[in-house]
Image (cartoon, rainbow, N blue to C red):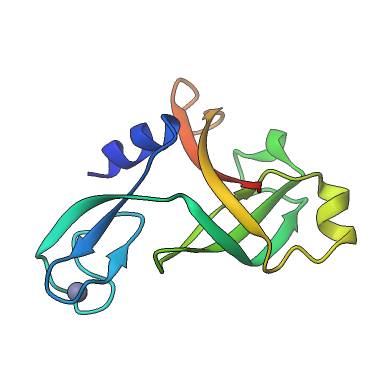
Length: 131
Ligand SMILES: [Zn+2]
């Protein structure tokens, strides 16, 4: 399910799970519902739209991500309810100069080449562009 999530993200589709018991949407997909812990879940495609809840500029990266700094990490509330973490596709100076909290964004997937831990691997990161 998780591999499917990232492959779909690369193709511009955001996948979540809808709980058939309580209606809550969970994203990224997990084995249980975020609200009731139920396992009666169905795969749904989300709109990919949401709003910025919070963000921060990263200058000192965790080990293995040093070549990617500076970058902006954002917490986004999707229109369907779940909150997901990704990177904000915005100029770092703009992120520091303006208050981007509440701004509308749309998610897409971007591939990054692995470095120190899995140098041959590519990983997909949720990116948010301003709309
Ligand atoms: Zn539920």
